[in-house]
Image (cartoon, rainbow, N blue to C red; front, side):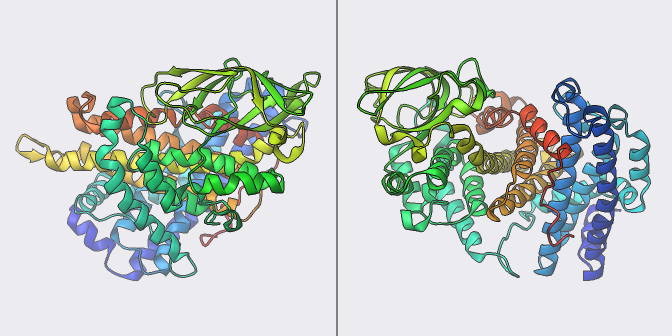
Length: 576
C-alpha cells in the first residue's frame, strides 16, 4: 500500500478510525494477562514466602527490573489508549492519531513479546523472566497479533513521517469534553514564551557555560512558573501536577535548564506546603512563588548517592536554639545563586538510618561571580558537566554553617526522610515532563534538519531509515507523555502514586535519550559538531536517566512495590 493511500484509508470514516482503538483495547487485555504471568513468575523467584525477600530482590535484579519495565510498558499502552479514546470522543482522532496508536502499540507489543530494552545493551526477554509460553500466548492473541503484523510497518511509518513532515502533530489538547481548557492556554503561553525567550539563546548559554540570565528568571516568575502548585493563599497559582507537567515540558522543549529551574521550587514548595509550620509557610511560600527566593535541594552526599539512610551531615543544636551544620554535600544544583537550601541532615547521631534524619530550611546569601558563597561556614567548588548547564553544579563543604532556630521543617525532628519521600512523586513526574520536552526538542531539530538537508538530490526525510527514526520518535514520545500525564493525574487525586511516578520517569528518560541519539544520527557528522544544538540536547538527555532516581532505582522501586501489592491507578480511565 502506498503511503498516501494509507493516509486516506486512515481518515475515511469514524468506524475505520475506531477499529484500531477497539484492537488496542483488546490487545491490552492480553498484555495485562501477560503482565500478571510475569508478576507471578517474579514473585515465585523473590517472594517465596509471600512478601518480597530483600536478599532475593537484590540477587534477582534483572528479573525484578524486567518485570518493572514490562509493567511500565503496559501502563504506557493504557495511557495511550486513554488518550486515543479522549481524542476520538472530542472529534480529534484523525490519521496522525491512528498511526501514533498503531505504531506505538505495534512496537510495544513486539518488545513485550520478544525483548524489551532496559538500556542500550540490556534486553529483558521472556525466557529470562520464565514466561516464554505466556509470551507466545500473548503474541498469538488476535488483537496483539494484528498489531505485530500491521502496527509498526514500513508503510505505516512512512505515512506517519509524511504527516509529520507536513507539520501535522498528534493531538495534545487537554481541554474539551470534561478536560481543562485552561491547561491548553498554559501550554500555548509557555510555548510562545519559550520560542521567544529561551530557544534562540539556549545553545549560546550552554556553550558559554553561563548561568541562565536573571532577566529570564524574572520573566518566568512573572508567568507564575515557580508557584504553579503553591496554594493561592500563599501567592501561588494553586494548580495541580498536570499543569506543572505541561509547564515543565514546554520550557524543557527549549532548554532543559529552563524546565529545571522550577524543579527546586517544586520540591521546596511541596516540602513547606505539606510539612511546614504556619510561620514557615507564610515566610517562604510567597517568596518562592514570586521568584524572589530561589531554593535548592541539598540532599546528596559524596559517598551515599541514592542511599539517603546513610546521610552523615550533622546538625547540632546550639545554646541559642540555632543549628550548626557540618558535613559534605555534592551535586547541588544552582547552589551559589540560591537563597534557600532544603537540607537533609542527621540531627540524632545516635539513631542510625532514616529515623535520625531531619529537614532544615537553611537561608543563605545569594552568591555572585566574585563571591559565590559569601556566608560563613559554607564553601563550594563547581563541578564541570557535559550538559544540564545554566544553573551550575557544586560540591559543598559545611563547617558549622548556621541555620536559624526556626529552620527545622515543621518544628519536628526525625521526620526528614518521610517529608522528603512525599515530594519524590511530584519531582519524578516533573522530571518525566522535562524528559518529554527534551525528546520533543530532539525531534524538532531532527525533523528540521531532515527536511533541509539533501543527499543524492533528495531531502533526508525521504529516506526510509530516516523516516523510520522520526516516526518511532514521535510515537514513543506521545506514549511517554501520556504516561507522564496519567501519573500527574494520579498525583492530583491526592493518593499515593510512587509507582506511577516511577514508571513515567523510567520510560520518559529512556525515550529522551533514544530521541536525542537518533537525532544526532540524522544529523550525521554535523550532529557531533558543537555548533549544532543537537549536540547540547544529547548531553542534556543523558542526565535524565541518572538524577531524581537512576533508572535502576526506579525499576527497583516499581518492581518491589508491585510485588508488595501496590496497584497503579492508570487503568481507572476512559480506556477501561
